[in-house]
Length: 148
Ligand code: FES
Image (cartoon, rainbow, N blue to C red; front, side, top):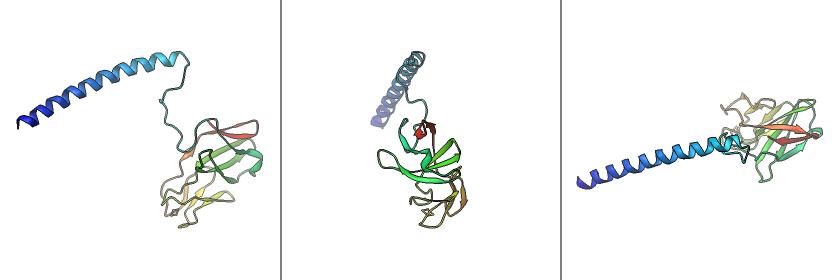
């Protein structure tokens, strides 16, 4: 009994300490924001690629179609040329059980259980997958599709 009470009060102290530290860190982060210095982790990182990574040349993809590519660290991604000068990208990893999807026209097909995704949006067109492919933010710079 005595031990439990002791642990309990100790935890309370630790929790309070963490809250104070968190508040202090928040103040520091706010200050850093105004100084245009290194970006802090305020936004969620893209799932498959660091910003500024070239995935493919836009001209390698026909308008309305998609192409498989890899990030520098070897992750499978899909790059879709959504219009003449725009692109979208997605994780190529099927949300059903993790196979790599394959571009086929304006669709992405999973070879494992035949799920079909929309190449322009990553949305499921046919199951068994029931979640869209995670989107990767990209922009087109000098004809290259680059992670944003
Ligand atoms: S892993 Fe893609 S459909 Fe099952």
